[in-house]
Every structure is written in C-alpha cells, then in structure tokens.
Length: 118
Image 1 (cartoon, rainbow, N blue to C red):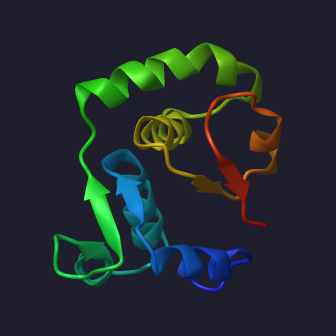
Image 2 (image 1 turned 180 degrees about the horizontal axis):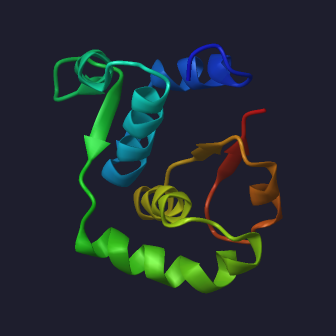
Image 3 (image 1 turned 30 degrees about the vertical axis):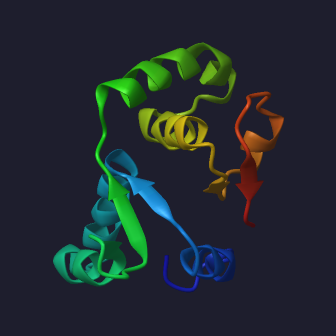
C-alpha cells in the first residue's frame, strides 16, 4: 500500500494476473479507512470485473474455508490470522504464488509458493 517497502514488487505483480481473496480485500479496505482513505474509490480503480483492472476479486467460498481450516495446525506456531490463512489457502487452491511482507512465513513448510517482498 502506498509507498511502503515492497510496493514496487506488488506493482510488478499487478501487471500480470493478480488475485485477491475477499477476506484479504476486506483487510486492505479496512486499513485504507483507518488511514483516512476512500475505500470505494480505491476499489473501483483496483478491482477487475473483466474490464482490464488490476485485481480480480475472488469470493470466499466453502472450498477456501476448508483449506483455511486445514492450514490452522501447521501455521499455529507462527500465530497466523484467519486472513493470513485465507491468502495461503487461495494460493494453494489456485496454484499461485502468495506475496507477503511477513518474513516469518519463510519458515512455513507448505506446498504453497510464498514470496516475501520486503
């Protein structure tokens, strides 16, 4: 977000196919509201509904919910939140790389491609 460390890598990822799950999108919007931003404006510019936008919003469904639950035990030592596990679940199910700023994720031994961006 904004000009934080790692923002360049996110911008690079957005040039290709980029997905964000609904749980994680809610987290982004919440942080924008907290920082005084307008989440409606940001959402309309960033999300793609097939019109060439930057992000594709993926609804949270039962399959992801089951995967989030499966990830509970192996991620518990790191204290990962439900939103963290939702991002990992979407990455695993879609076989996509998951970008994070959390260096602790490097220690996860999961069948998920994780890239720490800062």
